[in-house]
Length: 382
Ligand SMILES: NC(=O)c1ccc[n+]([C@@H]2O[C@H](COP(=O)([O-])OP(=O)(O)OC[C@H]3O[C@@H](n4cnc5c(N)ncnc54)[C@H](O)[C@@H]3O)[C@@H](O)[C@H]2O)c1
Ligand SMILES: CCCCCCO
Ligand SMILES: [Fe+2]
Ligand SMILES: [Zn+2]
Image 1 (spheres, protein in one colour):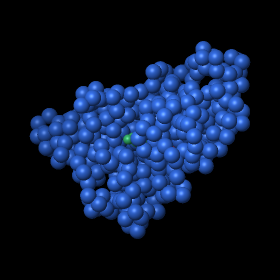
Image 2 (spheres, rainbow, N blue to C red; image 1 turned 90 degrees about the horizontal axis):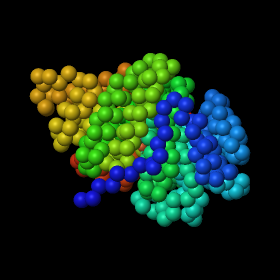
Image 3 (tube, rainbow, N blue to C red; image 1 turned 120 degrees about the horizontal axis):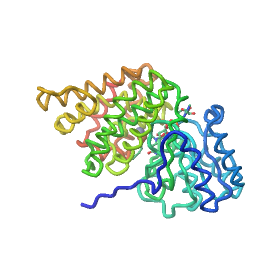
Image 4 (cartoon, helix red, strand yellow; image 1 turned 90 degrees about the vertical axis):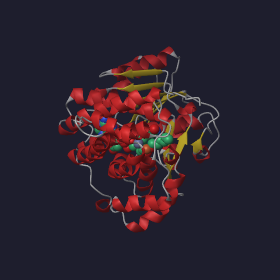
């Protein structure tokens, strides 16, 4: 069966990469970009250098900084209004997955009729739309390289997943110097999201030799450097390696797909507005223990990539050591151990089970889960 490996044409990374963006727009004759970001990024002074660089090239930029975590349909509409009202000709997303997904959604609307809810699901975006540069500042969702955008529909109370190669950014930027100020809890949550992407991609039904190497290397980098980045946010090497780890995890999952961790994690993200990476991290050890018997050899390799000494261990024991390594890493970086302390109750679960079964990430799981399986997993995650 044919395998599609999709990612941006140009990917710029390394400390100071942000300075490359104005030249990329000038080279294309683009004059009026909208910058889609959030107030924290502006407050941290992370957008100002971009504005100065664009101005020096005679480019007038317009800023929408109203994005919040788990962005919603109304936020997409407000950002799109800035694009239209100012006759913009390009889009620059600056931030984590939330501003970048909002920027992708605005790009969809720049060339396809609204509302954005029309594009939930796979392959519904006919035209790619305005030029999009994605400047990523967390490590991370890898939204800067993927075909996906996750937008919450507050009416249906679901995180819509839009999947289409037409929304892959034209340029991705990973400037680790922009990441030193990420708060500890966000560093931990986004790092565990990246680990989830790598592990889910490595055991997914869609796993492929063209993505396995990326998934394993991402697991190795994130396992080695996330504790350092959480310990000391100013550790530039750790920030840089985390940026690379999350990036290559994105290359893997964008083509290999994800699984039940994401399908289940999207529900508390949508309904309780919980951080995406926290939801993934709480569910990951439980779901991967559910998956482990169906991918024993792969979990043994995951254990090795996470730094477990598997010498002398049977493949079965090494695979079990992977689950323990995931749990230990989550605890080390301070992720809450369960949903109960985050305001989730058993009453939430029946609806979440139904929505998780319909989530586009679910079919990628190495083994199909029944409604009862999912309910049990949610209960264990309390
Ligand atoms: N498109 C995809 O492929 C994909 C994949 C996974 C998750 N997502 C989505 O991405 C969203 C989560 O994105 P995220 O985890 O990157 O977090 P985020 O973009 O929601 O940001 C979280 C918080 O960190 C702050 N922040 C971000 N960068 C910072 C920096 N450099 N310094 C200081 N503060 C900073 C933000 O202001 C915000 O308050 C969710 O909606 C999730 O569903 C998308
Ligand atoms: C199958 C890709 C879906 C990506 C959503 C990540 O939260
Ligand atoms: Fe996700
Ligand atoms: Zn994710």
